[in-house]
Structures are given as C-alpha cells and as structure tokens.
Image 1 (cartoon, protein in one colour):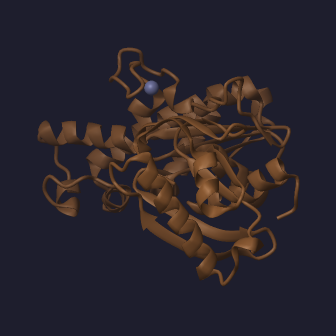
Image 2 (cartoon, rainbow, N blue to C red):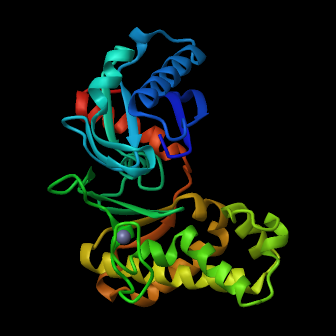
Length: 314
Ligand SMILES: [Zn+2]
C-alpha cells in the first residue's frame, strides 16, 4: 500500500503471481475508509484468482512508515495519514485472515533476497530511489529491523549539513540531495536560471516532472537533466560505498521508481562512484546490482514475511 496506489497479488512460491489487483489509494481518507478499501482489494484479489478465503494463509501488508510487525501497530505513516494505529487487528476483523505487516522497503528487500538478485546472498544492503530514498538491511539472510523497528532509514543520513531542509526536520539528508524530488527541484532552479532544457517540452508547462520524462530527456541528451542526474548518481555511489565500508555486505541492490526508469543510465554511474570510494578489502565481497523485480519485490516479500511469522511454507 503506497500513498497513491494499492497493489495486491495472490501469490505463492511455486506458481508466483496468480492474480493481481491495482487501485488508487483513497485520497486524504480516514483510517476506517482506508481499512475498508484494503479489505475490498483483498476480497477482489481472492475472487480474481478464483480462490476462497479458506485458501489464503495470510494477508501480508507493506506500509510506507514506521511500524511494529509483532504488535501490528503503525507508529507513523505520513503519506497515509496513519498514526498509532493497530492496522493488523482492524483489517483482520474485516477479512477473517491473519494479517501481517511490514515496512514497505523491508518487504521489498525480503522479496529481493528470496526471489530476486539477492538470492543466495547472505548480507545485503537494499536501496530504493524514488520520490524519497528508502533502505533495508539483510544480515545473515534475515531482515535487520533494529532496536525499535526503525533500521534502514538511509534516506535520512545527513550528507550535506548546509543543504535543503528535509521532511524529517534535519538539513541535507541523503534524500534531499539524490531522490527524484531533489533532482526535479534542482532542474527547476536551472529552468529559473534560464538554462536550456527540453524537459518542459516533454512534460508540458508547469506539469510535474516524473521519472519517465527524466528518462526521455536523458535519451535526448538534455544537458541540464543529464548533469543533475549524474550529480545525484555520484552522491548515491559515495553514500553506498561509505555504508558498505561500515557493513561489509556481499551485495548492494539498487531499485525504486527512478532506477527502474533510468537504470541503464544511472546504475553504471552509481557503480563507478561506488567503486571509487570503497575500501579494497570491502570491495572484494561487495557487488552493486540493480533489482529486476520492480514493484513486485514487495509482493514476493509477502511470501517471506508469512513464512517467518507463521512458520509455514507458502
Ligand atoms: Zn531527513
């Protein structure tokens, strides 16, 4: 469940995705409305797959925010307007299936680990670059949730303390420098400074600049866009190298909306600056690769979460 869309699938490890359902997230909805929408998506997905409620082992729900997967309570999910909300209990009442919750980036990382480029790897750092920047850590094959279930907040590592203010209140967080929103903000300042770019032609005047438009501008070798994205890649690479020097993982996985749209351009650039900044001994173990699962990573992660919490094979 994201701030703009809910993506659901009936899935198991043998057959993969059996059916999928996608719907927009109700905008500015009260928690009760959100829960009803979720229950609707669950029932629709079961029907679409030609299954019965009794065939379903669990509903695994990814949420963009802080939460406790053991109590089923969402601490804060700003994009959904949820705060201190026991979403697991509420949804279970409506669907009559065990509900499991996990942070969306962690859930995606679990999918990457079992079904994607992280297969057979032991220690993985996963980074999703999109509107913001999310991270997750896998140590010894298990997700590392941290002491208060808040580990992996790579987007809020301060990389430029004289930089722009972040949504978290700090200045110069990684995501204020290298996320899609940061890149777009920088492009807008270039437009204001009358630098030549075709980006406004691609999107239309005063329209939001999305990943696809950025990809089209890069393809046309637009100097402003190429420069701003290249600068972001440099910061992403150096930040991932620093973290890899600390963690000595065997794989760094990059993914997310921006990388999906621009991976061919971005991943080699990120890898180059990663290699420039990583210690020789750490570099022996660590490979930087791009996720191939896209949004499906979190869907596959649902299998892994269910197996972990219910102790069953799915
Ligand atoms: Zn921040």
